[in-house]
Image (cartoon, rainbow, N blue to C red; front, side, top):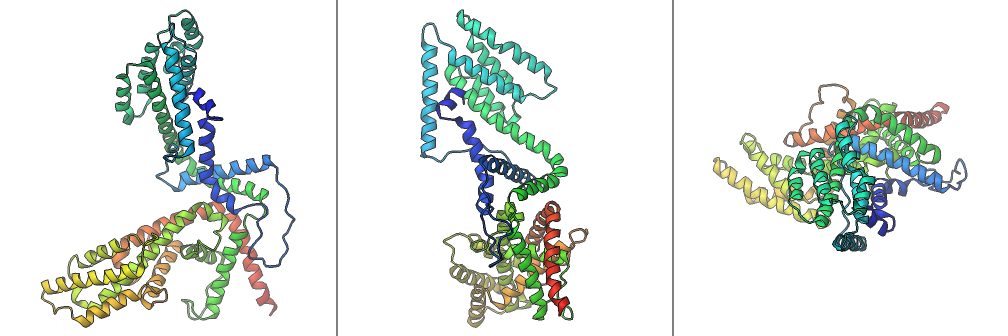
Length: 503
């Protein structure tokens, strides 16, 4: 959009876009790490240093560093990351103001062009902005195109032509459209051809600016895809340095991380004391890597509503939450299928396609599992009804004894019981899913994946895909924040050993 309209909007679209882009990436972080945030896990322990006032310059510098760190992280972990133009909500005040001011600008330009002789003040400023944008698209090797743009869009010459009534703005507009066609992505060729069909100058200039905005987004996404391989080599160190700078300005920025690791170490120690660990003769090892892997596993059972998320994984909170929901859905799905298999017996074991059909039926009913309107009781009751119908038809087709009313009632009751978190089958499958994910973390450096626990074969594909994404995210987080984790874990495990040494 032209700069005049931007100025009319009181600061311009450019500033608004920058603010909106920053808000999306830094809002979550700024809510959680503030200079006066008390540590929730230290009880009555006084803070190491009193709170201090932070200047606006320091705050802006810190915000910029966090934003850059979040952007680099998003580019790295999200292979589908793309720059998208901001879209104002329909009917919002900001959208109405923008539309009004843009309309006023283009109406003013049209009135100037209709005067006799035409006034080209606004049009020349538009040409200057178009020239600047076209030059910004050029690569270092585009010397010939740069020279061509500089010669044709020679602003002093254009100004002289306007003063002498010799300016052919239509010819310049067609040159601009042709140059845009040379620089745009292939997917924009149809849109460029539509520009060539516009005869009136003002609608053509308006369409040119709209197309230039799209080309800016295309160029930004091309730049992101180009730098991603290079960023992969530098991103871990870059994020680590940025977080260190942030930590120096916010000394309490690891409070929730420390609490997260402390709670994990305590849970492992209590598990060994209660004799509930997998190793019957030894308590779970409190080695740093063991505590660390179990801590990541706890993120898939996190209470996001009440427990603050650790700072070092805060940028990936949404991803961990999505994986947590996927894991919980796989637990429920595998629980239902295990109940079906054990209730029905070996009659359905060798039937081709039956288990996949039952799995699809359950998946459809659990698709909206995390929507506000979802009712687990109603969904599982419906699942029980549908599975009984499918099983009865399948058994009858293959010559097996029909599904009796008692067996149907038992199957429905057991499926409905999986809504309870302490249900035996559900707890068993949850334990096996967690065991598999933990094994994937511990063997992530080896090529051979860990064996799949019993009962998870029907969901093996989904579980393996989840394990791969989970391991990649965890390994990258370890790579970035390993120095900070080492210090925290050393302090925690040393303090854990001190009481036992004294006794």
